[in-house]
Length: 313
Image (cartoon, rainbow, N blue to C red; front, side, top):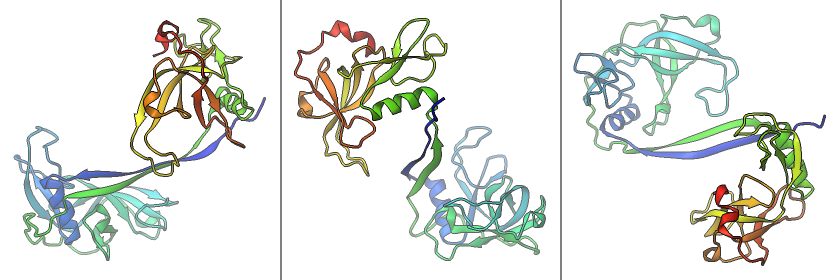
């Protein structure tokens, strides 16, 4: 049995959001070393604050300062911190109910080991040396032997409030395509396009998934398709993606390869973007050493009749 491919992949993007009055006050407060919660109509204090009562769905804006000290309600030890986590040495993830709050805040606890952590232990905020108005302004929590700190009664009014944040989102994982897609990718490296035929409905799927999405049965019969195909639908891309060396505007299309019963994605080149159309006949273009087509270009054939691809839209 051939080896199944695998590769490390990273999905990463900056998530930008604006802040309403409650979240703005909370994050601005952290910048100023003040922890704010929000009080509900029945007297509960929620930290971190939310804009709507999770029980009644009422809008709530009554901000109230709570203490930077609190009690661990539950915890889990992190023996191998990952990139971007609050501490680069082993630490505990803890839920801390700050003094004056009725809910718990998730953050890191700097402790020498799991034996030093327990539910019910007292902790306090360790502030970051440089603060900008983000949850990371709390560097972590640390063990604390004293009594509850006294909040100053701040009501959330700040001269220079934080109005928006940019939160980097990143997912690192190892992708394994499986038997069917491994065979498909290996064939692409040989400049062939291979799918699989369903033994029940006889449809050919490219790229294959190892099972028919219609019948739900396993597929194993390999079928070479294309390489030519027909543009079924398309879109014009006007925003340049970071790390992608393609000038905008360009066209990304669904392409029904000859012999396939499922359209695949591909970029259209070799033709002005405003001349791409449904029914355009195209063929793949490989670059030297590439494992997959760089783009598809027009073949010069007459456009395909709509009835030949309307079921693949």
